[in-house]
Image (tube, rainbow over all chains, first blue to last red; front, side, top):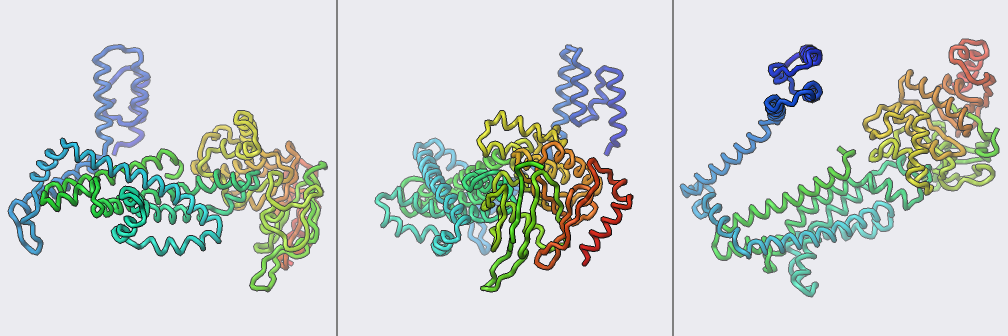
Length: 316
Length: 254
């Protein structure tokens, strides 16, 4: 760990000399170093010096990356896949039966085969479409219901019993009812997905609205805001972290419900693809389907967290 | 003395009903605040000072009695009754400038004009270079200054302050007291200042009201005759200052 005094001393020497010293510069990895570099080197247009400068900056950035955070997870995954390959290749049968499980090589071959088919992408499209529709509706209904419950005790007492009763029912149990109630299969699948997403959103929104400090509301009202403005300018901004958390949880619930609906209703979709592969004894495709589901689900949940970070940098 | 910002409290009773039994926090409280005056309310903890301030601000409905602002009864919080709380109430998702311009913008002032007003008051409290900062980046004293600027940007008739400097260190408190004096001199707003620090009350205000624990009864009202601008050393070492402080402390302890 270099002493800061030493680095500052080097900086002073560099500035006073006004010339580029490669040895000193390579030691300095802080922003000040690069700023001073560009200031002093402004007079030079020598391209070799510019190249050397770029190299030093690259080295600085490389040194800053936390290599452990990237290499260790990768090694862990490689080890895991290796273990999987060994277990399935050797048809190990010790408590668990790996004799029928496809190897990673089989899965990769199945992936290559299926990724060029039109059906695979059609299934992905349908799953994403249903998720977006159902999740969008769930966000709208959930946020409105959560805010209503936070504001009005009567509405809370009216709505809460339904939430508590319907929330624990798993998506699969909804399938027969949904098919009977809704005119088309597509609508029933979206309804099941909607139910999977809406409950975390309602509860987290309600919690966020409930948590708004009373002083903040009082301060806003004493600044001349009427009740509507308090809702939009104080309550909702304060509750946004809770709302986005609810949305992320709801996204996970939506995927879970969607797959249940797709598998049983049988009409396109990644869940249907996975279930059909099981029926057709294409075991490699099952794992392809599972991995696809995992990827799509984490991308959609990650995009919600990304949106949240963009919208509210102040909450971090 | 101004012709606006006169607050009159008439036989005010504040409390709540608890299963039929009525618990009064403040009972039969009557007091007048002239427009443009600076009044301090002191009392031991739990005597109802904060409740009284909140009621004047329109946040609590009185059980009995009236609070009048320039002759009109106060029913709801309005922009005319600015409040500065002890806790930090800056909106954390807005910068200082956006916080300060919140009041004017609620009234419908255009954004450019609101920014101008906000910058004026931010400069008055000495936070010009921090106008684009978020509250979490500011220290406690700076947040309080921003809150004062935010309350003042609305040009309220009355400024209610509920132990605003209670959680600050002595140096920051002294700085903010001087800023408050400047602001009061410039804007001539009626200030009702709740504190538990007798010296602060003596230094800042024209009148000191001592509330008791017994249902918020007014024990005594002291008038501080020292002319402005005041000097802390001079005030507290003078015979008059020391006698007044003794009387206040005695009244508090009684």
